[in-house]
Length: 282
Ligand SMILES: [Mg+2]
Ligand SMILES: [Zn+2]
Image (cartoon, rainbow, N blue to C red; front, side, top):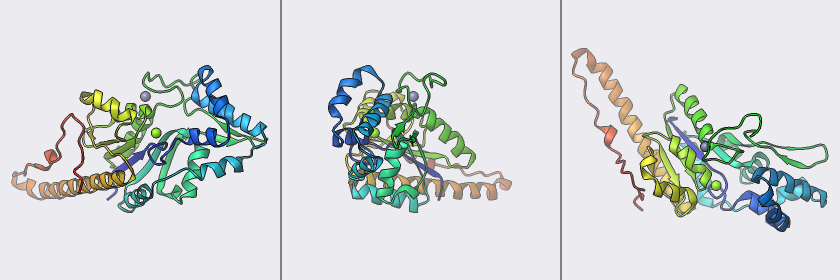
């Protein structure tokens, strides 16, 4: 069973907080951050803050120690491990950065469960300073999407994952996210895909206000327990559908010489109302 790609946002989806906020707050840079925010993009500002933190004598280890305290719900850890054990291909698309995400995932022993992390690149320069670079360079290769911040259009990343997945025969995507930046990729999802927006967060609100733009099924979640329950339920449902589909294909190939091709009825077995679906609590 490897027909499902599960794509996670990172901040406020996998971890409970925002990793940028955590570092800025814990390392005492909140005032400077708020002062500079009106003058530069978020990504440039985080790079600048890393420079300020370094000039105050704080090391990459100090930043890493702070990141390791990022809260991650135990049921989300379990959900990631279960989805992986069920054969799903797990990926991350995040507008945070590689240093932050890798540090946290390693702390929780989760890094090897993900086949790909799409995020803003980072490096530690010769002075030992963390540098954060944009995923898309807005001057040399702007992504041109008006819905997304200049650093990253998650919709473009989803399109690349879709193109690659179809060559490998992986057809179904489940996307989990909370923020405004998760709206663009949710619009790229097709019928048969699932969007899992975090209830009462910006992407949930955007979907609620624009239900007709969505082709994917929408299944909301609120916390780690609900994320686990909904995600594993969807993986199960898709697996059952895919199995009955492949059995049906076999049936067709056996039966077609008699020219009595059975018509599959499973395709409509999952309802697709335009409104948000609340998964039944079991
Ligand atoms: Mg997020
Ligand atoms: Zn976009």
